[in-house]
Length: 529
Image (cartoon, rainbow, N blue to C red; front, side):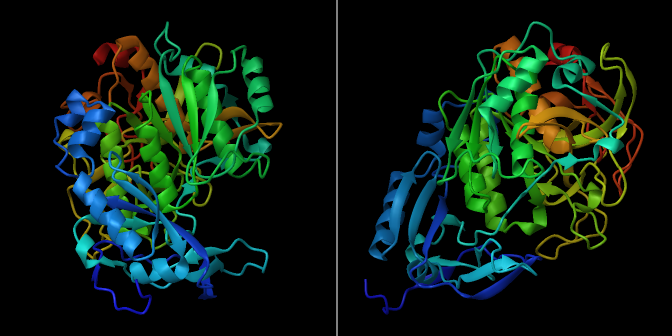
Protein backbone atom coordinates (compact mmCIF):
# COMPACT_ATOMS: atom_id res chain seq x y z
CA UNK A 1 0.00 0.00 0.00
CA UNK A 2 1.17 3.54 -0.71
CA UNK A 3 2.63 4.84 2.53
CA UNK A 4 1.01 8.24 1.89
CA UNK A 5 -2.49 6.88 1.22
CA UNK A 6 -4.82 7.93 4.06
CA UNK A 7 -5.81 5.18 6.48
CA UNK A 8 -9.32 4.76 7.85
CA UNK A 9 -8.59 4.40 11.57
CA UNK A 10 -10.94 4.21 14.55
CA UNK A 11 -10.06 4.71 18.24
CA UNK A 12 -9.15 1.61 20.27
CA UNK A 13 -11.15 1.76 23.52
CA UNK A 14 -9.12 1.55 26.72
CA UNK A 15 -5.78 2.28 25.05
CA UNK A 16 -5.25 5.71 26.65
CA UNK A 17 -1.96 5.49 28.51
CA UNK A 18 -1.70 7.18 31.92
CA UNK A 19 1.29 9.44 32.57
CA UNK A 20 4.39 7.62 33.82
CA UNK A 21 6.49 9.46 36.37
CA UNK A 22 10.25 9.02 36.19
CA UNK A 23 10.67 9.06 32.40
CA UNK A 24 11.37 11.82 29.88
CA UNK A 25 10.88 11.85 26.13
CA UNK A 26 13.97 12.69 24.06
CA UNK A 27 12.57 13.25 20.59
CA UNK A 28 11.16 11.02 17.88
CA UNK A 29 12.64 7.62 17.14
CA UNK A 30 14.33 7.08 13.76
CA UNK A 31 11.63 5.85 11.35
CA UNK A 32 13.44 2.58 10.65
CA UNK A 33 13.68 1.59 14.34
CA UNK A 34 12.33 -1.98 14.67
CA UNK A 35 9.25 -2.43 16.86
CA UNK A 36 7.35 -5.51 18.02
CA UNK A 37 3.84 -5.59 19.46
CA UNK A 38 1.16 -8.03 20.58
CA UNK A 39 -2.44 -7.80 19.43
CA UNK A 40 -5.26 -9.44 21.40
CA UNK A 41 -8.37 -10.56 19.54
CA UNK A 42 -11.91 -11.00 20.83
CA UNK A 43 -13.23 -14.39 21.90
CA UNK A 44 -15.45 -16.17 19.41
CA UNK A 45 -17.83 -16.86 22.33
CA UNK A 46 -17.96 -15.58 25.93
CA UNK A 47 -16.23 -17.79 28.49
CA UNK A 48 -18.98 -19.14 30.79
CA UNK A 49 -18.64 -19.18 34.57
CA UNK A 50 -18.92 -22.96 34.70
CA UNK A 51 -15.60 -23.20 32.82
CA UNK A 52 -13.92 -22.29 36.11
CA UNK A 53 -15.40 -25.31 37.87
CA UNK A 54 -15.52 -27.99 35.17
CA UNK A 55 -12.17 -27.05 33.55
CA UNK A 56 -11.35 -27.38 29.87
CA UNK A 57 -8.58 -28.96 27.87
CA UNK A 58 -6.36 -26.60 25.90
CA UNK A 59 -8.00 -27.91 22.72
CA UNK A 60 -11.51 -27.24 24.04
CA UNK A 61 -10.59 -23.75 25.26
CA UNK A 62 -9.07 -22.81 21.92
CA UNK A 63 -11.82 -24.32 19.78
CA UNK A 64 -14.70 -22.81 21.75
CA UNK A 65 -13.36 -19.57 23.24
CA UNK A 66 -10.25 -18.67 21.27
CA UNK A 67 -10.23 -16.35 18.26
CA UNK A 68 -12.35 -17.45 15.32
CA UNK A 69 -10.51 -18.47 12.14
CA UNK A 70 -12.31 -15.67 10.29
CA UNK A 71 -11.16 -13.02 12.77
CA UNK A 72 -7.60 -14.32 12.71
CA UNK A 73 -7.54 -14.26 8.91
CA UNK A 74 -9.03 -10.76 8.80
CA UNK A 75 -6.43 -9.40 11.22
CA UNK A 76 -3.41 -11.00 9.57
CA UNK A 77 -4.43 -10.15 6.02
CA UNK A 78 -5.30 -6.55 6.92
CA UNK A 79 -2.03 -5.93 8.73
CA UNK A 80 0.08 -7.56 6.02
CA UNK A 81 -1.65 -5.42 3.39
CA UNK A 82 -0.64 -2.35 5.39
CA UNK A 83 3.02 -3.39 5.53
CA UNK A 84 3.06 -4.95 9.02
CA UNK A 85 4.92 -8.24 9.44
CA UNK A 86 2.95 -10.97 11.21
CA UNK A 87 5.44 -13.05 13.22
CA UNK A 88 3.02 -15.34 15.04
CA UNK A 89 -0.73 -15.92 14.99
CA UNK A 90 -2.19 -18.04 17.80
CA UNK A 91 -5.94 -18.56 17.64
CA UNK A 92 -6.17 -20.50 20.91
CA UNK A 93 -4.46 -17.72 22.88
CA UNK A 94 -6.05 -14.98 20.72
CA UNK A 95 -2.61 -13.42 20.26
CA UNK A 96 -0.96 -12.05 17.12
CA UNK A 97 2.68 -10.95 17.34
CA UNK A 98 3.64 -8.32 14.78
CA UNK A 99 6.73 -6.31 13.89
CA UNK A 100 7.87 -3.57 11.60
CA UNK A 101 9.62 -0.21 11.54
CA UNK A 102 8.39 2.66 13.68
CA UNK A 103 7.18 4.47 10.57
CA UNK A 104 4.77 1.66 9.74
CA UNK A 105 3.51 0.60 13.18
CA UNK A 106 3.05 4.16 14.43
CA UNK A 107 1.00 4.97 11.34
CA UNK A 108 -1.15 1.81 11.40
CA UNK A 109 -1.93 2.22 15.11
CA UNK A 110 -2.35 6.00 15.06
CA UNK A 111 0.32 7.07 17.50
CA UNK A 112 3.71 8.73 17.86
CA UNK A 113 6.62 6.85 19.43
CA UNK A 114 9.35 8.82 21.16
CA UNK A 115 12.67 7.83 22.64
CA UNK A 116 12.36 7.62 26.42
CA UNK A 117 14.94 7.58 29.18
CA UNK A 118 14.72 7.57 32.95
CA UNK A 119 14.50 11.12 34.23
CA UNK A 120 17.78 12.68 35.41
CA UNK A 121 19.75 9.78 33.96
CA UNK A 122 22.93 10.03 31.96
CA UNK A 123 23.54 9.25 28.31
CA UNK A 124 24.36 5.62 29.11
CA UNK A 125 20.96 5.03 30.75
CA UNK A 126 18.63 2.44 29.20
CA UNK A 127 16.51 3.77 26.36
CA UNK A 128 12.90 2.85 25.74
CA UNK A 129 9.97 3.72 23.53
CA UNK A 130 7.09 5.73 24.91
CA UNK A 131 3.73 6.91 23.70
CA UNK A 132 0.96 9.02 25.16
CA UNK A 133 -2.75 9.28 24.56
CA UNK A 134 -4.78 6.57 22.86
CA UNK A 135 -4.26 4.21 19.94
CA UNK A 136 -6.28 3.61 16.80
CA UNK A 137 -6.72 0.55 14.61
CA UNK A 138 -7.81 0.04 11.00
CA UNK A 139 -11.60 0.41 10.82
CA UNK A 140 -12.11 -3.13 9.48
CA UNK A 141 -10.62 -4.46 12.75
CA UNK A 142 -12.98 -2.46 14.98
CA UNK A 143 -14.31 -4.77 17.70
CA UNK A 144 -12.06 -7.62 16.53
CA UNK A 145 -8.80 -6.34 18.00
CA UNK A 146 -9.29 -5.55 21.70
CA UNK A 147 -5.72 -4.59 22.68
CA UNK A 148 -2.43 -3.50 21.11
CA UNK A 149 0.40 -3.96 23.59
CA UNK A 150 4.16 -3.40 23.59
CA UNK A 151 4.44 -0.25 21.46
CA UNK A 152 5.48 1.53 24.67
CA UNK A 153 8.23 -0.67 26.14
CA UNK A 154 9.07 1.17 29.34
CA UNK A 155 9.19 -1.23 32.32
CA UNK A 156 5.62 -2.17 33.21
CA UNK A 157 6.07 -3.97 36.53
CA UNK A 158 8.36 -4.12 39.54
CA UNK A 159 9.53 -7.13 41.51
CA UNK A 160 7.80 -7.38 44.87
CA UNK A 161 10.75 -8.33 47.06
CA UNK A 162 12.68 -6.63 49.84
CA UNK A 163 16.23 -7.04 51.10
CA UNK A 164 17.08 -5.85 54.61
CA UNK A 165 20.63 -5.26 55.89
CA UNK A 166 21.88 -8.26 57.82
CA UNK A 167 21.98 -6.30 61.06
CA UNK A 168 18.22 -5.69 60.83
CA UNK A 169 17.29 -9.36 60.38
CA UNK A 170 15.64 -10.57 63.58
CA UNK A 171 15.30 -14.17 62.45
CA UNK A 172 15.04 -16.06 59.19
CA UNK A 173 13.76 -19.36 57.87
CA UNK A 174 14.50 -21.90 55.21
CA UNK A 175 11.48 -22.75 53.04
CA UNK A 176 11.21 -26.28 54.52
CA UNK A 177 11.04 -24.73 57.99
CA UNK A 178 8.13 -22.61 56.77
CA UNK A 179 6.53 -25.75 55.38
CA UNK A 180 6.54 -27.01 58.96
CA UNK A 181 5.21 -23.71 60.35
CA UNK A 182 2.35 -23.76 57.87
CA UNK A 183 1.84 -27.53 58.16
CA UNK A 184 2.16 -28.40 54.49
CA UNK A 185 0.47 -31.78 53.88
CA UNK A 186 2.67 -34.71 54.83
CA UNK A 187 3.55 -37.27 52.20
CA UNK A 188 3.50 -34.72 49.37
CA UNK A 189 6.31 -33.01 47.48
CA UNK A 190 4.61 -31.81 44.29
CA UNK A 191 5.51 -34.90 42.26
CA UNK A 192 3.66 -35.08 38.96
CA UNK A 193 2.90 -31.35 39.03
CA UNK A 194 4.32 -28.41 37.09
CA UNK A 195 4.86 -24.94 38.56
CA UNK A 196 5.31 -22.10 36.08
CA UNK A 197 7.22 -19.05 37.33
CA UNK A 198 7.03 -15.70 35.51
CA UNK A 199 10.13 -13.49 35.45
CA UNK A 200 10.61 -10.11 33.77
CA UNK A 201 14.38 -9.94 34.03
CA UNK A 202 17.40 -11.50 35.72
CA UNK A 203 18.31 -15.14 35.75
CA UNK A 204 19.56 -18.13 37.71
CA UNK A 205 22.81 -20.04 37.92
CA UNK A 206 22.53 -23.82 38.11
CA UNK A 207 25.57 -24.09 40.40
CA UNK A 208 23.88 -21.79 42.91
CA UNK A 209 20.76 -23.93 42.85
CA UNK A 210 22.79 -27.11 43.34
CA UNK A 211 24.63 -25.56 46.30
CA UNK A 212 21.45 -24.21 47.86
CA UNK A 213 19.44 -27.40 47.66
CA UNK A 214 22.38 -29.52 48.76
CA UNK A 215 22.59 -27.34 51.87
CA UNK A 216 18.93 -28.13 52.58
CA UNK A 217 19.49 -31.85 51.99
CA UNK A 218 17.07 -31.77 49.06
CA UNK A 219 17.83 -33.04 45.54
CA UNK A 220 17.90 -30.13 43.10
CA UNK A 221 14.48 -29.97 41.46
CA UNK A 222 14.00 -29.89 37.70
CA UNK A 223 14.32 -26.25 36.59
CA UNK A 224 13.92 -25.28 32.92
CA UNK A 225 14.22 -21.79 31.43
CA UNK A 226 11.72 -20.82 28.71
CA UNK A 227 12.29 -17.67 26.66
CA UNK A 228 9.34 -15.51 25.58
CA UNK A 229 9.46 -12.64 23.05
CA UNK A 230 13.23 -12.87 22.75
CA UNK A 231 14.03 -12.81 26.48
CA UNK A 232 16.20 -15.46 28.16
CA UNK A 233 17.86 -16.52 31.40
CA UNK A 234 20.51 -13.81 31.98
CA UNK A 235 22.00 -14.19 35.48
CA UNK A 236 24.84 -12.40 37.22
CA UNK A 237 23.75 -8.83 36.59
CA UNK A 238 22.65 -7.76 40.08
CA UNK A 239 22.04 -9.95 43.15
CA UNK A 240 20.07 -7.08 44.71
CA UNK A 241 17.94 -6.72 41.57
CA UNK A 242 16.08 -9.08 39.28
CA UNK A 243 18.42 -12.02 40.01
CA UNK A 244 17.26 -11.86 43.62
CA UNK A 245 13.66 -12.19 42.49
CA UNK A 246 14.38 -15.11 40.17
CA UNK A 247 16.39 -17.08 42.72
CA UNK A 248 13.90 -16.36 45.52
CA UNK A 249 11.02 -17.68 43.41
CA UNK A 250 12.85 -20.82 42.30
CA UNK A 251 14.31 -21.65 45.69
CA UNK A 252 11.07 -21.14 47.62
CA UNK A 253 8.93 -23.11 45.15
CA UNK A 254 11.61 -25.75 44.63
CA UNK A 255 12.31 -26.31 48.31
CA UNK A 256 8.63 -26.60 49.22
CA UNK A 257 7.65 -28.72 46.21
CA UNK A 258 10.91 -30.42 45.20
CA UNK A 259 9.10 -33.12 43.25
CA UNK A 260 7.44 -30.62 40.90
CA UNK A 261 8.90 -29.55 37.57
CA UNK A 262 9.68 -25.81 37.57
CA UNK A 263 9.37 -23.93 34.27
CA UNK A 264 10.76 -20.39 34.50
CA UNK A 265 9.36 -18.11 31.80
CA UNK A 266 11.60 -15.13 31.02
CA UNK A 267 9.91 -12.25 29.19
CA UNK A 268 10.57 -8.55 28.54
CA UNK A 269 9.28 -6.23 31.26
CA UNK A 270 6.52 -4.72 29.11
CA UNK A 271 2.77 -5.12 29.15
CA UNK A 272 3.09 -7.30 26.04
CA UNK A 273 5.93 -9.43 27.42
CA UNK A 274 4.21 -9.94 30.78
CA UNK A 275 0.94 -11.05 29.17
CA UNK A 276 2.67 -13.21 26.55
CA UNK A 277 4.57 -15.09 29.28
CA UNK A 278 1.41 -15.80 31.29
CA UNK A 279 -0.52 -16.90 28.22
CA UNK A 280 2.33 -19.13 27.02
CA UNK A 281 2.66 -20.73 30.46
CA UNK A 282 -1.09 -21.36 30.86
CA UNK A 283 -1.44 -23.00 27.45
CA UNK A 284 1.71 -25.14 27.77
CA UNK A 285 1.72 -28.93 27.72
CA UNK A 286 1.53 -30.34 30.33
CA UNK A 287 -0.82 -27.81 31.86
CA UNK A 288 0.76 -26.41 35.05
CA UNK A 289 -0.95 -26.74 38.40
CA UNK A 290 0.07 -23.21 39.27
CA UNK A 291 1.59 -20.06 37.84
CA UNK A 292 3.59 -17.94 40.31
CA UNK A 293 3.85 -14.19 39.67
CA UNK A 294 5.96 -11.93 41.90
CA UNK A 295 5.78 -8.82 39.69
CA UNK A 296 3.16 -6.09 39.54
CA UNK A 297 2.31 -2.42 39.43
CA UNK A 298 -0.44 -0.21 40.84
CA UNK A 299 -3.56 -1.03 38.84
CA UNK A 300 -4.03 2.58 37.71
CA UNK A 301 -0.60 2.52 36.03
CA UNK A 302 -1.88 0.06 33.41
CA UNK A 303 -3.95 0.88 30.38
CA UNK A 304 -7.48 -0.47 30.60
CA UNK A 305 -6.87 -2.59 27.50
CA UNK A 306 -3.79 -4.19 29.10
CA UNK A 307 -5.61 -4.92 32.38
CA UNK A 308 -8.54 -6.45 30.53
CA UNK A 309 -6.34 -8.55 28.24
CA UNK A 310 -4.24 -9.76 31.19
CA UNK A 311 -7.35 -10.61 33.21
CA UNK A 312 -8.64 -12.62 30.25
CA UNK A 313 -5.34 -14.53 30.14
CA UNK A 314 -5.85 -15.34 33.83
CA UNK A 315 -9.39 -16.46 33.01
CA UNK A 316 -7.94 -18.82 30.41
CA UNK A 317 -5.54 -20.18 33.01
CA UNK A 318 -8.34 -20.75 35.53
CA UNK A 319 -10.52 -22.45 32.90
CA UNK A 320 -7.61 -24.82 32.20
CA UNK A 321 -7.37 -25.67 35.90
CA UNK A 322 -4.36 -23.45 36.64
CA UNK A 323 -4.21 -21.47 39.90
CA UNK A 324 -2.27 -18.22 39.48
CA UNK A 325 -0.68 -16.95 42.71
CA UNK A 326 0.30 -13.26 42.64
CA UNK A 327 2.19 -11.02 45.07
CA UNK A 328 -0.07 -8.30 46.49
CA UNK A 329 2.66 -5.65 46.72
CA UNK A 330 5.26 -4.45 49.20
CA UNK A 331 4.30 -0.82 49.73
CA UNK A 332 1.27 -0.95 51.99
CA UNK A 333 -2.10 0.51 51.11
CA UNK A 334 -0.50 3.31 49.05
CA UNK A 335 1.19 0.89 46.61
CA UNK A 336 3.91 3.53 46.12
CA UNK A 337 1.61 5.89 44.20
CA UNK A 338 2.26 8.87 46.48
CA UNK A 339 -1.06 10.71 46.11
CA UNK A 340 -2.18 10.05 49.68
CA UNK A 341 -4.90 7.64 48.58
CA UNK A 342 -5.20 3.88 48.78
CA UNK A 343 -4.32 1.73 45.76
CA UNK A 344 -3.99 -1.98 45.03
CA UNK A 345 -1.50 -3.80 42.84
CA UNK A 346 -2.27 -5.52 39.55
CA UNK A 347 -2.36 -8.37 38.51
CA UNK A 348 -3.03 -9.29 42.16
CA UNK A 349 -6.26 -7.27 41.99
CA UNK A 350 -7.64 -9.48 39.22
CA UNK A 351 -10.44 -11.65 40.62
CA UNK A 352 -8.88 -14.53 38.67
CA UNK A 353 -5.60 -14.31 40.61
CA UNK A 354 -5.00 -15.65 44.11
CA UNK A 355 -3.64 -12.47 45.72
CA UNK A 356 -0.90 -13.12 48.29
CA UNK A 357 -0.30 -10.71 51.18
CA UNK A 358 2.42 -10.68 53.82
CA UNK A 359 3.02 -11.13 57.54
CA UNK A 360 5.78 -10.84 60.14
CA UNK A 361 6.49 -14.24 61.70
CA UNK A 362 8.10 -15.14 65.01
CA UNK A 363 8.34 -18.93 65.22
CA UNK A 364 10.52 -21.77 66.42
CA UNK A 365 12.27 -22.84 63.23
CA UNK A 366 12.90 -26.33 64.60
CA UNK A 367 9.46 -27.22 65.91
CA UNK A 368 7.34 -24.90 63.77
CA UNK A 369 5.62 -23.49 66.87
CA UNK A 370 4.43 -19.92 66.26
CA UNK A 371 5.03 -17.28 68.92
CA UNK A 372 3.35 -14.48 66.97
CA UNK A 373 2.30 -13.60 63.45
CA UNK A 374 1.12 -10.11 62.56
CA UNK A 375 0.63 -7.88 59.52
CA UNK A 376 3.91 -6.99 57.83
CA UNK A 377 4.42 -3.24 58.18
CA UNK A 378 7.88 -1.81 58.84
CA UNK A 379 6.80 1.80 58.39
CA UNK A 380 6.76 4.25 55.51
CA UNK A 381 9.35 3.39 52.89
CA UNK A 382 10.49 0.23 54.67
CA UNK A 383 7.96 -2.22 53.29
CA UNK A 384 4.46 -3.35 54.17
CA UNK A 385 1.99 -5.77 52.69
CA UNK A 386 -0.22 -4.51 49.91
CA UNK A 387 -3.97 -4.76 50.26
CA UNK A 388 -7.16 -2.83 49.79
CA UNK A 389 -10.05 -2.48 47.37
CA UNK A 390 -9.84 -2.51 43.58
CA UNK A 391 -10.99 0.58 41.74
CA UNK A 392 -11.57 -1.32 38.49
CA UNK A 393 -12.65 -4.91 39.27
CA UNK A 394 -16.08 -5.57 40.76
CA UNK A 395 -16.60 -7.56 43.96
CA UNK A 396 -16.59 -11.26 43.05
CA UNK A 397 -19.53 -13.41 44.10
CA UNK A 398 -17.34 -15.52 46.38
CA UNK A 399 -16.17 -12.42 48.29
CA UNK A 400 -19.61 -11.02 48.99
CA UNK A 401 -20.42 -10.92 52.66
CA UNK A 402 -16.85 -11.25 53.98
CA UNK A 403 -16.61 -7.58 54.87
CA UNK A 404 -14.71 -6.01 51.99
CA UNK A 405 -14.73 -2.30 52.87
CA UNK A 406 -15.78 0.52 50.62
CA UNK A 407 -13.04 2.39 48.80
CA UNK A 408 -11.08 5.07 50.66
CA UNK A 409 -12.49 7.93 48.61
CA UNK A 410 -10.19 7.72 45.61
CA UNK A 411 -11.27 7.51 41.99
CA UNK A 412 -10.61 5.05 39.23
CA UNK A 413 -8.79 5.84 36.01
CA UNK A 414 -12.04 7.10 34.45
CA UNK A 415 -12.80 9.44 37.35
CA UNK A 416 -15.56 7.30 38.85
CA UNK A 417 -15.85 7.17 42.63
CA UNK A 418 -14.03 4.26 44.22
CA UNK A 419 -16.97 3.26 46.37
CA UNK A 420 -18.18 -0.04 47.80
CA UNK A 421 -18.24 -3.15 45.68
CA UNK A 422 -14.63 -3.53 44.53
CA UNK A 423 -12.61 -6.76 44.62
CA UNK A 424 -10.81 -7.07 47.95
CA UNK A 425 -7.06 -7.75 48.10
CA UNK A 426 -5.38 -10.02 49.25
CA UNK A 427 -6.97 -13.47 49.47
CA UNK A 428 -4.27 -15.26 51.48
CA UNK A 429 -0.94 -14.56 53.17
CA UNK A 430 2.30 -15.93 54.59
CA UNK A 431 5.51 -14.45 56.01
CA UNK A 432 6.94 -11.60 53.93
CA UNK A 433 8.78 -9.31 56.37
CA UNK A 434 12.49 -9.39 55.39
CA UNK A 435 13.35 -8.98 59.07
CA UNK A 436 11.84 -12.45 59.51
CA UNK A 437 12.55 -13.53 55.96
CA UNK A 438 13.64 -16.35 53.70
CA UNK A 439 17.15 -17.80 53.52
CA UNK A 440 18.17 -17.95 49.85
CA UNK A 441 21.28 -17.98 47.67
CA UNK A 442 21.75 -15.43 44.87
CA UNK A 443 24.76 -15.03 42.56
CA UNK A 444 27.02 -16.96 44.95
CA UNK A 445 25.85 -15.11 48.07
CA UNK A 446 23.69 -16.36 50.93
CA UNK A 447 21.04 -13.75 51.69
CA UNK A 448 17.79 -13.16 53.54
CA UNK A 449 14.99 -11.78 51.36
CA UNK A 450 11.38 -10.93 52.06
CA UNK A 451 8.43 -9.38 50.29
CA UNK A 452 5.12 -10.68 49.05
CA UNK A 453 7.10 -12.00 46.08
CA UNK A 454 8.13 -14.87 48.37
CA UNK A 455 4.52 -15.57 49.31
CA UNK A 456 3.42 -16.21 45.71
CA UNK A 457 5.82 -19.16 45.15
CA UNK A 458 5.10 -20.46 48.67
CA UNK A 459 1.40 -20.65 47.87
CA UNK A 460 2.16 -22.02 44.39
CA UNK A 461 4.09 -24.87 46.01
CA UNK A 462 1.28 -25.51 48.48
CA UNK A 463 -1.32 -25.62 45.69
CA UNK A 464 0.89 -28.07 43.76
CA UNK A 465 1.12 -30.34 46.81
CA UNK A 466 -2.64 -30.13 47.37
CA UNK A 467 -3.16 -31.02 43.70
CA UNK A 468 -0.81 -33.99 44.09
CA UNK A 469 -2.70 -35.21 47.15
CA UNK A 470 -6.20 -34.80 45.69
CA UNK A 471 -5.34 -35.85 42.15
CA UNK A 472 -7.01 -32.76 40.70
CA UNK A 473 -6.12 -29.21 39.77
CA UNK A 474 -8.02 -26.30 41.34
CA UNK A 475 -7.99 -23.45 38.83
CA UNK A 476 -9.97 -20.62 40.40
CA UNK A 477 -9.58 -21.87 43.95
CA UNK A 478 -11.12 -18.89 45.77
CA UNK A 479 -14.73 -20.22 45.85
CA UNK A 480 -13.43 -23.25 47.74
CA UNK A 481 -11.29 -21.14 50.08
CA UNK A 482 -14.00 -18.62 50.94
CA UNK A 483 -16.73 -21.30 50.97
CA UNK A 484 -19.60 -18.94 51.89
CA UNK A 485 -17.96 -17.53 55.03
CA UNK A 486 -19.32 -14.26 56.38
CA UNK A 487 -17.63 -11.20 57.85
CA UNK A 488 -15.82 -12.04 61.08
CA UNK A 489 -15.70 -15.77 60.37
CA UNK A 490 -12.44 -17.68 60.04
CA UNK A 491 -12.17 -19.83 56.91
CA UNK A 492 -11.44 -23.54 57.21
CA UNK A 493 -7.79 -24.37 56.71
CA UNK A 494 -6.48 -20.94 57.77
CA UNK A 495 -4.87 -19.43 60.83
CA UNK A 496 -6.30 -15.95 61.22
CA UNK A 497 -4.06 -12.86 61.52
CA UNK A 498 -5.75 -10.24 63.67
CA UNK A 499 -3.04 -7.76 64.64
CA UNK A 500 -1.48 -4.92 62.64
CA UNK A 501 -2.27 -2.70 59.66
CA UNK A 502 -0.89 -1.78 56.25
CA UNK A 503 -1.67 1.93 56.43
CA UNK A 504 -5.34 2.49 55.67
CA UNK A 505 -6.55 -1.00 56.58
CA UNK A 506 -6.30 -2.96 59.83
CA UNK A 507 -6.38 -6.68 60.47
CA UNK A 508 -9.33 -8.21 62.27
CA UNK A 509 -11.14 -11.48 62.75
CA UNK A 510 -11.90 -13.14 59.43
CA UNK A 511 -11.02 -11.69 56.02
CA UNK A 512 -9.28 -8.31 56.03
CA UNK A 513 -7.52 -6.07 53.50
CA UNK A 514 -4.09 -6.80 55.01
CA UNK A 515 -3.76 -10.58 55.17
CA UNK A 516 -6.96 -11.79 53.48
CA UNK A 517 -8.24 -15.04 54.95
CA UNK A 518 -4.97 -15.51 56.84
CA UNK A 519 -2.02 -17.90 56.57
CA UNK A 520 -2.34 -21.57 55.61
CA UNK A 521 -2.81 -24.51 57.90
CA UNK A 522 -1.97 -26.92 55.12
CA UNK A 523 -3.20 -30.22 56.56
CA UNK A 524 -6.52 -28.70 57.59
CA UNK A 525 -6.79 -26.94 54.25
CA UNK A 526 -6.37 -30.25 52.45
CA UNK A 527 -9.17 -31.81 54.48
CA UNK A 528 -11.48 -28.87 53.70
CA UNK A 529 -11.08 -29.06 49.91
